[in-house]
Image (cartoon, rainbow, N blue to C red; front, top):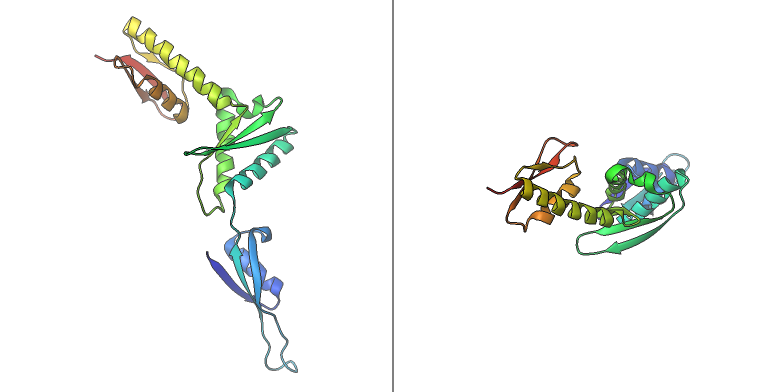
Length: 207
């Protein structure tokens, strides 16, 4: 736990100096006054500056993420509720409400961008790093199921035709779902080609 010690003519001045050094707002710290300021005797001797000790509060990344999402959705005029679930790999925040398609975007692109920004904000002052996933009405689960079915269908096409099948560009997470869906098929091989954000999965028959 890092403790910042600062002095100033007043407690307020010492505190502001500590906040400036830490680059945070007042509600993100706890502080105590080590020495109160005192005036010099007859204005000549014995004057003492104020001294404070300041420490960053322990930040819960999930609480910060929820506050960020509430601010964003409120600014967009959206009424949402949130549920939080946790497993071994990550914590998932799921948004629920009406007309949330705008937050998902095409193939989840807006959702991914919002998740990225949420994690930037949530992890900024956190001491413990957490993997926080953002979902909306279980979109990611439904999208994963759709991609798994697509992978199996296109793998069958590749086996029937003997030609390689090239999928549309996908995010790294979605490409991983395709690869994982077909890894147990001994007749099929998958790999990715192209540059982000146009990188795509290719399905071929093993020779």
